[in-house]
Length: 405
Length: 234
Image (cartoon, rainbow over all chains, first blue to last red; front, side, top):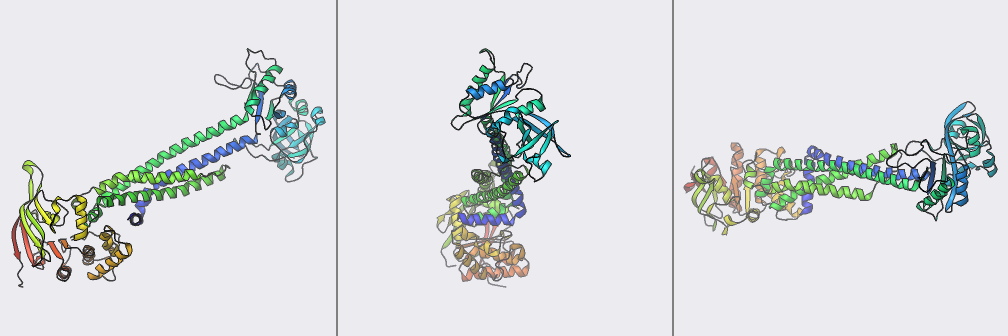
């Protein structure tokens, strides 16, 4: 009986193609929106997580200036003392649980090779930097200790810089000019791609900190210190140790606040991931509203359908249909309609999400749970919004229904 | 007129409205139809003939009095029980054919069998047989829009007889047809009456249509005005 009714309702869907299509449209759009939003959203979350892990895993970043917080801007204010070799030395000497500790100072500088030029992020650092940031060399070697100490004019370049100057060629041994000083390329960095904020992480030149300070920055300051935790030490444990050592090194009295900030990249990653998850949920909820509107569309069309087919209902009742037969017929019809809409919506939603993941360069992350939920929800909408019209049809008086024009 | 009593009206009243505005469509009608009869029911509009037909077809119930169908007190049954009664024992033919649009002839004829729970294959066979009985071989897969009025009424008759009912209720079955088609349909009904022993109650306006029946009941103002056997004369 149920299969018979499903078959009949499919026939009725086919007999009224245009009307069925218009009814479906609401559900199709609703489900497509929900699926697309949630799929794109979870792709974005994955992308954000991946981006932040590119900065280095289990990484603490120390910067001068009060930490950003509620009530005032963080970062550099007037009284800020820069970081220097004193702090770096203190960390290297006293900090346990760190895999790598590395200073970094950075500036956008014009880099020239032959007749080509490029504005690049030039970073002065040491050989521990690669370890701290999980960065590998495609070819060449890192700075030697003596190069680090003496500030020799050697550098490692990123993929973007190589392509600009050498195309696919081997850059090793070539001399590039950075600002007014020349430096010899000794290695090529592994490509990292763009960050989620559109920053090219491969447009970089790394040189020994001493060389950078002397030839480019003109001071002995260190912009930031990267501290990578080893495998046994969570960053949350490492962070207070770093804070203690730095307070000591900078002789900050106990009643004064830190004049430096330590950012935990793991926490930032988690925070950003949870922010995108929240965003995804919100977008999904908004899309869900459109699904509700789609459901009201189903109810509307089913009411029209019941009115339009009053005679049909009359005939069916006259030749022996029970109330429940009519009720089931219209209920199944509404459910089949919205389920059909749901399935089409899923296809469209996934297609949209696929296109978006191509254009936005985020992972395509369809979730079976979300898809199942969408199917179940669209069927439920059909049943809920189809019930009232169906009941109205089933309660008709056969004599009146037959007389209906 | 030798069959047992199929239909009995015992002081049947049907009233609409309340108080001063009460209208009595039927005012204490007594009536009996035996099985195997072919009865024409006539009368001006508002005479109560349609109300009587609805009660006979178990679509409606009397306000007062007793309507007994096959010995069952059909006037006291609830909606679903009357639906069951109609499905098992009554076939309907209407003036406007009342076929499902965009549905083939054979699907239309199958409809009452669906509500009986007959399996698809058997349903199809029975429907094809019923269509053959009304002379529609070759038109089984046409939709109503592709059939003439006479053919549509034949589909409707096939739908009414596919369940092998005891009673056929026909409400002006030829009202929308021309003379030739009217003649054909009436011949068909007469044949069903004589060959299958189907009891037929038919409402009509036209005296020559009524003449196909063996008996004519005239309604006037909610009463039976006359009830007579049709004489076999030209």
